[in-house]
Length: 309
Image (cartoon, rainbow, N blue to C red; front, side, top):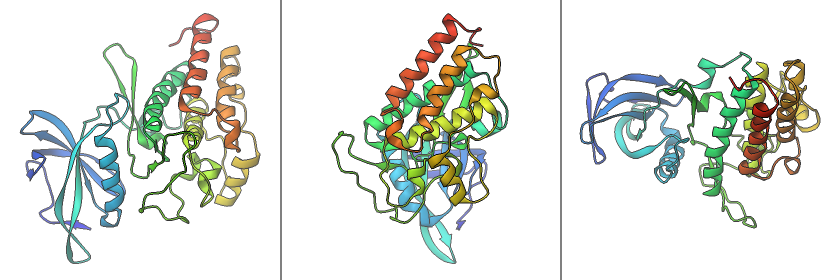
């Protein structure tokens, strides 16, 4: 898809949501371009995410609707959305532009990818991710694509990590009541596997299987494992083989990679292993439960282990 009058630095986008002067491209993904922009009406710097793939319009509209209702420091903020003219396969159409908070930190894969990180730091990161997911889950939203690319990490003035959860483009909406029946919004097909296989829970890789908060917890545990060890808990060349490992195998203990970590590393290993269980019934029930388990590990760090940083 090619945008009409392709936006460039200095251009002003006029919309019912306001006027925005583009300051430059800050990110380029497979389906969207993100621009830094100046909100001329509210006098603030924002990000404008412009969809490039018109076939994902309904999915992007859902993401905008969801995030406009959210107000949590650990989740990217969407202030509004509007359409702009575009051309797809020679025909005029419309595409979506989302106005959202400008995130100062890079995506995880650029900052932490492939490196081993101190388990204490990883626990602090997981604590923030789980806090954000507890908020989303409490509103009936399952992210379904937690991975390093969808997390940003900034450093505040006190040198503390500040984590935000991004990109709810393939989120699933369910009734948050415990006994509710799940429903799927129209943009998801019953035989479509949505997500990133390395981070997906086994039930998410099987079309038609039940998805709930525990599916996100599996992905969080996978990210935590990768941050500590520098590698994924499971690896296979074929999707079918990967699914078999995720369903029936146990990931190597992180104590193999942090041999002198002490009892607190063993406790973190237990939290990660619990939430990497192939059967979701063996994981923590909620993000809040997993977060409390991580916080107990953090308390052990402070009481018995080496310094947190």
